[in-house]
Structures are given as structure tokens and as C-alpha cells.
Amino acid sequence: MPSVKVLPFDPKLGYPQKQLVKINNTAYRLFYRWNYQGNFAVLRIRRLEDDEIVFEGKLVEKNPFEIKDPQTYETLFVILPWNVNEKTAEVWVFA
View 1 (cartoon, rainbow, N blue to C red):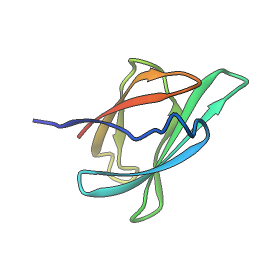
View 2: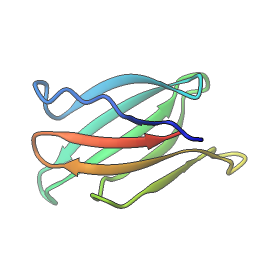
View 3: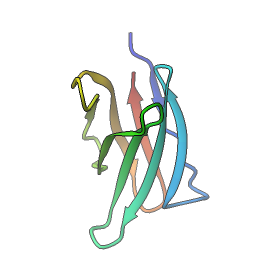
């Protein structure tokens, strides 16, 4: 049964911000930024062990994304942006 967690985001820091997280015993760096022209949040997820970007894209509420390994296309985990606006980014992760 997969565990559900929320990716770290500190609303006091706002956008842009970086966070470190461990998912399935693998470390990732999260980089959140706000696109002021398009009025949406962007998330980049970088795997630290090989410095590979596994996801970079617009966060659309209630629209899940499968995060896949760029070489093998194996699903690593799934993210679900739940509450995303100019002040916060609540993104669930299913691992």
C-alpha cells in the first residue's frame, strides 16, 4: 500500500524556494517558482544521486503526474498538486 505524504513547502518563504526531500530512500531537491506572467507555479524535481531532473512542469491543481526515471521510464512516484496558489503549494506524493 503506497504511503501519502505532502512535499515540503514553507509559506513564510514563498516563491522561489528550494527544499530537500527523501522519497523511497532516494534524495530529491525540489525547486518551486511562481510564473507571474502566466500566474501559475512551476516545480522542478532533481534526483541528487545523479543530478538528473525527473520532473519540471506547471502545477495544475487536482491533476496528478507520474514521475518516471528518464532512462528506464519506470514510475518512481506520483505527485498530486492539491492546493497551489501565490502563497502556498500543497503537493501530495504517493510513493
